[in-house]
Amino acid sequence: MPKITYIEHGGKEHVVDVSNGLTVMEGARDNNIPGIEADCGGACACSTCHVYVDPEWVGKIPGKEDMEEDMLDFAYEPDPARSRLTCQIKVTDALDGLRVQMPEKQI
Image (cartoon, rainbow, N blue to C red):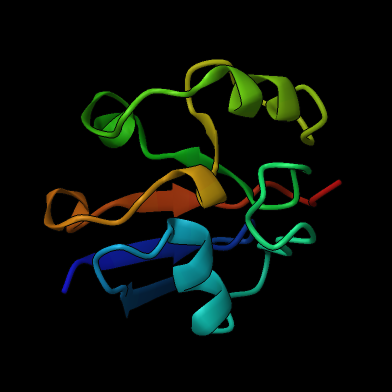
């Protein structure tokens, strides 16, 4: 089972096992990770599961689709290169070791 590291804005790390087929957002929700609100439940209809992907991982995960790009316009301090919505990142064995950091707040 892939291990994902969720890093709170203040630096506290949570390393959790996330089942293949879930999204990174569902892994956070199921493990009570603070900082990912996921108000829309994973429908890519808000930006409250926004994270910054570790620079080493940016090129290793599938790219953003247009709907995600549009929703990131509403995120708090989006980074064009590193910002992602965790509801749009499907967990596979290839994501073992993924590191994501939450922004200061979700909007």
